Image (cartoon, rainbow, N blue to C red; front, side):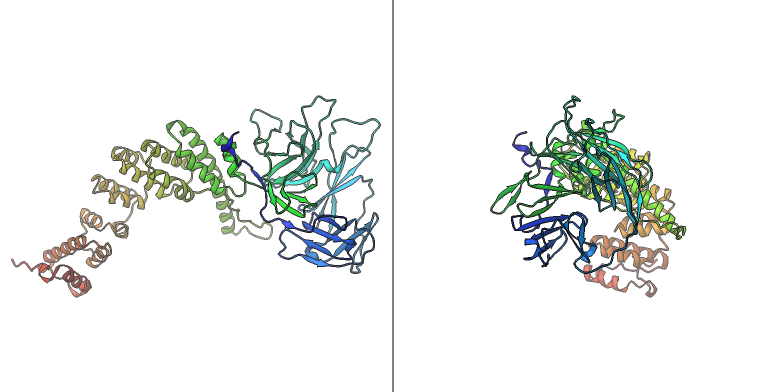
Length: 600
C-alpha cells in the first residue's frame, strides 16, 4: 500500500493508560471487570496491595495479613467492601459482615461469565457446556432469562466439555446485549476459517442467532467492542479486524458480515526502556474495550481513530454510514465533505447528493425527536406514568450552521472551483434539506445569491426568485435591496418578496434600517407614499451610524427639503429632536451648507 498510507492504524491504545507494578514472582495482578480496577498484590498482601482504576486520580494502597495465596480479590461498588478469595469454596470479607441468602438455583455449572454493564450472568451448563443459562439482576432480585444453545462446529463423541469461556464474550452493541461466540475453524467441515457468531439476548423472549462475522483465517483470536464496533484481534498475523453489524450486504438476507476495513495492526505503543508493545502473548483482553499487559504493568482502553478510515473506505456512501454511527465523528465528516468538494466537478454531484442526503436524514430524525419531546412536555404528558427523555444530540447531527461554517462558506471562496459546480453544490444541499422537509436557513440562500452576483449570473438569480427556488425571507429581501447598485431590478424583487411575506410597511423600513440600507428604506417609503410622515430623527440616526458622510448629507438634505415643502422652512422643529444632527451637520459641512429658507 506504499508510503502514502503510512498512518492507517485505525485502532490505537489510549494515551494515558493505568500503570501498575508488573506481574512477577512476588507480585500477583488481578483485574475486576465490574469496577475496571487492577489489583497488584505483593506477597499475599503482606507487603501491600495497590488498587488502580481508569478514572482514579490516586491509587488505593493497604496491607493485609498473608493467609495464603490470593486467588481473586475485588471491591464492591464505590470501594466500600473488600472481598478476598483464597480457596475454591470460600470468600473472606476483611471487615466482619453478616450475609443473607436471598435466592438459590440448583444447576450444574461448568463456568460463568458476568456482564457488569447490564448485570447479566451467563452460566455454562450440560456436559458439552454449550447450553447457556442467563440470569438478570435488578434492584436486588434475580430473574431467570430464557436459556439458549450455542451451535458447536462439531459434536464430540463421547460427549465432553466443548465450549470454553475463552471463546465467549458478552457485550452491548448499539444498545442491545449480545453473546459473542468465537467459532473456530472445523477441519472436517471444509470451512474457510473461523467466525464470530452473535446471539442477541433480549430482556424478554428467546435469544436468537442474529449475525455472523467472517474472519476467513484461523488461529488465536480475542474480542473487544469499541464504539459499537466488534474488534477481533488475530495474534499470529498481529492484525485486528473490525465489523459493524449495522453495515450489511444489501444482497444478503442472512446477516453475514465481512470486515469493514482491511485488517490492520493496532498503532504500536511505545513503552519507556522496553520498546513497543503490540499483540504480545501476555496481553489479556477484557470487555468491552480493555487490554492489559500484566508483564509490562499497563491497562489500556482501545480506541478507534476515524481519520485513517477515510483513506481506506473509498465508497463515500459507505464511509458516511460508517462515520455517522461513530461517537466523535463530526469534524471528520465535515472534513470529508470539504475534501469531496475540493476535488469535485459536475461528475461527482451524485456522490455529493448521496452524502448530503445521509446527513439530512440524521439531522431530520433528531429534529423530529426534539419536536416530539417538546410537544409531549408542553401538552403536560409528563405525568408519573411516562418520563420523557430529551433526545441526545450526538455528533452525527450536522446542522446547517455546521455545514455553512466548516464546508460551504470556505468552498464558495475557493478560486479553483468552477462557479457552476459551486452553485450546483449549494443547490444540491438546499434540495436535500427540502426533500427531508427541513426549513432552509436564510444564510444558505444568501450564500447562493452572493455567489451568483459575484459571477454576474443575474439571469439565474432572477429565475431562482421567479420560480421560488429561493424561499422568501426578510433577511433575503434585505440582501436583494443591497444589490440594487450592481443589479437595479433587485430593488423590485426585494419589495415583491417583502409584500409576499405580508410585511407591514413600517416593519419593512425597520428591517432596511437595521441592515444600514438607509437610502433603500427612504426609496421604499417614497414608493408607498409615506415619506411625509416618517421620523427624520430615525433616518438621521441610521445614516450617522453608517459613518458615510455623503450619505448623511443626502438624508439630511432630503429632510430639509421636506420641511421646506411642508412648513415653508428647511429647519427642524424642537419636537423632532434633531438638534444633535444639525450640530453634527454644521461640524462636517459648515453652517453655510445649511439650506436657506426659500420665500415664495
